Image (cartoon, rainbow, N blue to C red; front, side):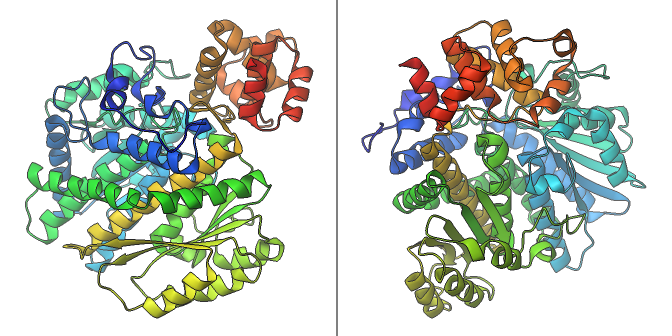
Length: 599
């Protein structure tokens, strides 16, 4: 196992940029050289690996193969988009700014749009931001992968939101430049330039955008990106697509892709708000200063490596013992808990109860478009007390997530006392401003109740909204580390690949096929054949199966589990599906099952 002596060399930080490194894959799908052995790492070592991966976001782009977050061209584009937002803020009549995406991208579109609408409300201004997420609001809280493949649904969603508007700035987010849902929206915007100005946010260059034909369409994502690239020279469209390096777990764009999305959107919108309401012009220098605050956020967060490692280890032990990890959060930090938990099911093949998030105030605090989503989506602290607390024990890890701003620390203490009666596996993570001692006594009470308390202390801010955004990014980094590391410790990762991912849309189907190729060394056709057998649970493929398209295969995959591990065991051993299933029953930890095949 990788131990505490893990170090990150400068060459490893940049190795992924070599044209010879996994040349057939786009940046967002490459494996990260920094985390090759993350499945063998200790908790503290996992945190150091994640820190090094996140630091790649802010690497200097001078002379690099790809444009980077701080590259001059990227900052210039951000400046121009911020000015577009400023124009709408100053004259919002019949105008709208729409943020749209799938999965993590859609969840962050919701988070950011909500935050800036709140900021407008505090200034007695009307909302101008709207969000779209593929699959509707249920996708905020659960995996709704299939709608990502539907460009027509994307267009219908956009038309509905923008009905009656005469000017729309549309920001479509697709980390891999791959989601048909977003491609359809961008194509629609390009066809109606009299109303729509499209912005594409992602983390691959246009030539690496997905070029697979979209059923029922005459375009691919790559062709849309190329058209936008041409129009960008006349500022009729904008591409914000820096490379931020491969993910710590290959393809898991919920992590670095999500963090970079949040940074880019907030830098642009904050600059526009400052220009509109504080008479501070939008300048590249100002944007770079704001970027610097986010880079500092990484430093402050990972300065607590040991504390994060302890939380990660506690969560991993809970999952390995059949327990649960519960996030109890307040305000936007509670929303981030909901988001992080929702992403564990498709990424790691986790059970829907393995990691759950709950937020004080429930849907009233979430303030989503569709309101309460029914009994399958219980998110309030009251729901936790009613549904989870009665069966809580020391196998379950409970994490309190809050800040010392506002008046909720007393509420945190009260809930901590209630939870402590059922489990000692209780932990606190909180943010405070340096010198603020208003809640010190209540915090002492919480510390006595908790097995561990992790305190993040921040310098007094120049701007309140900026500090809250830093708290949010810090919390996202921490929760991503805890949930990812916990599933690594549970054995859900092999090397740095998610071998138990759900194959529920075309992107994940193609990712699964590539993964099987890499790990088995077999040809693409044989790997896809093994995957289809595992999806349909048959040892011989029928003509109906082989003639179906990828969307049909993805639909079939939703009713089963462990399709990729089953296919991999078959490829590595030559066993039948039944024999592969028996092997996985004998080795329920996926990493150990793969290693048993290779030994």
